[in-house]
Image 1 (cartoon, one colour):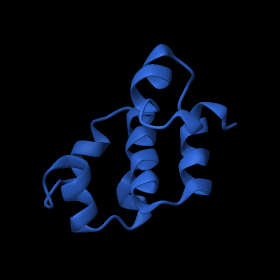
Image 2 (tube, one colour):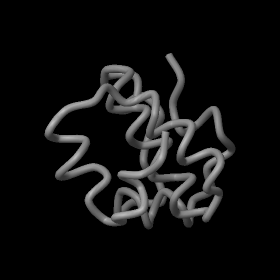
Image 3 (cartoon, one colour):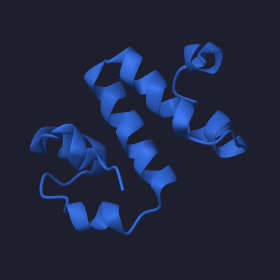
Length: 81
C-alpha cells in the first residue's frame, strides 16, 4: 500500500500534516488506500508541487467529502482533472 512514507516525508512535514514529527508508518498501514492518497495529496500540496497534488487528488474517488472537505481549501482544485 502506498503511503506518505514512500515519498520521503520529513519530520517537519509530519509535524505540519499530523502535529507529530514522530508519526509512525504503521498508522498509515492501518488506513485504507483512499485515506493514504489523501495524505499524499496533502503532502504535495504542502510542498507546492501542483503536478503531484493533482495526480493524487485525481486518485481519490469523487464524493461529497472530496468536493467539500478534502479539496475545499482551493477553488482552483475543482477545475483540475
